[in-house]
Image (cartoon, rainbow, N blue to C red; front, side, top):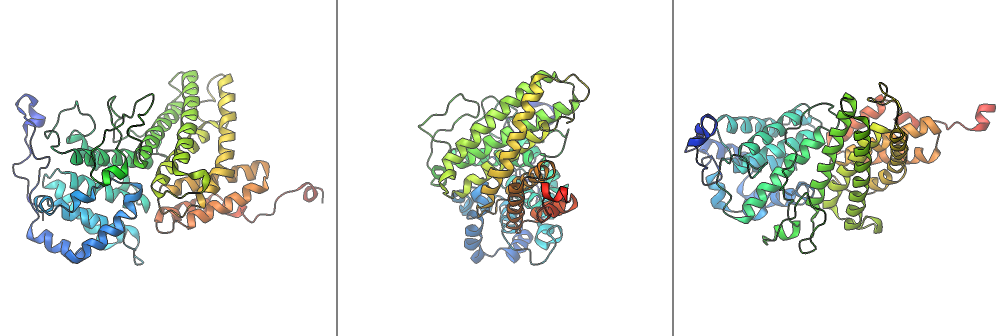
Amino acid sequence: MFEGPSPSFPSSFFLDANHFTSLSGNVLTRGPTTRLRLISSEHVTISDRSALHHDYFSTIHQWLPMISEKRLLDTQLSLEDASHDLLLLCMKLCTIPLDNYPPSQHPLYSLTKSLSSAAENAGLASLRLIQSLVLLSIYELSHAIHPAAYLTIGRAARLAILMGWHDRDAQQLFKPADTWSLREEQRRTWWSIFILDRVINTETSGFPFATPEPSPDELLPVNDEDWGRGKSIPSQSLYTASFSSYAPLGCFARTCQAAHMLGKVINNRDCKKRSSQEAADLLTESQSLHQALAALKLSIEQTAGYESGKEEYPLWSAIAICVSAQALLYSSYGCPDAPGTKSRARLALDTEMQGLSVEGLRALASSTGPRLAQIPTQCPFMARCFYASAAACAWFIREDREPEMRDALRQMVSGLKGLSRWGIAGEYLALLEQGGTLKLIDAEPITVDSLSS
């Protein structure tokens, strides 16, 4: 199916770095075999490609823009890398209707899984192979195919780290990209892996990430519109006190910032559960995270025209991840008996953070969640927002019998039903049913009169 690369992978890379010299070309691959081209053409013909590009770049690309359409259309590049055909198949997988197949049993999913494993086993290493794995992980995450999504994004991360994308000072398999557009596409693909890694691990307590924390000199993706036009512009740094007005942040850069914050919240939660770190330090950090997330959310909303009702689709992945990070932070500190607090003396900071968390959950349930539910988006990251908001609504209904929370819960359920394109929405609805949350929508509210009768 896939022929091994020529030249083959240099064993000195792992055996003795002193004898290794970075390779030119940025790929270890060969052109597609006749058999691979035949299999690919059965699913994506030459005449199909224009429609496929339109379907992909008007949907998935809007909230995870990692593929350069300009470079994708370069026929010479497609002839040199067998993984190009695999990428087209993965693009189609993420955009076609399932036709009553269970997501994990769709024939095209089985085919792309098999081909990606064959490409890895052949020793290939290229941008297109990694992007194929990212799209496979998106499909698996969006349809709640676990643990496949977790394992697939780990494979993508390992290959990207092997190619040195995580740190410019790390050992580099290849020489630096010879064009700005290629380097930017590599950066966007690495950030896509980082984002999915954090999103997939939101609820997995104590698991190490597949992607490390960004290096001190990590750059954010450039403005999406300029990149789409192939215009070379300066990149902004992730770690900076202020951003330059010369190169405004794009939508995808905002999503990267949100995922970075989500990772910090996950680490804070895990450290809190282990109780091995000084409680005061964790509480101080949690308050800083609360402030940073509030500022980031406000910035994203203002950029998107959120308050004025403007729909800027690419930014909803950023707001979805930001809100998910807030929900995770507040649920970790909103309960007085949360893990990490029982075995020590309670601090004043505990009470302060609990108050901030309860108010944060109230805003999420009564305001943020319902507004997000009005947005006509198919970004699967929204499913987590709706589920977290629904859980917060249920908590307030059970604790305080607040009638407005019942209306908000109804909107959260409607939002999940609106994401029926993805299996993850159905899984979240099933969890709400399992927890008795759906029954609260139509349950008779308890009033003073009903208690006295």
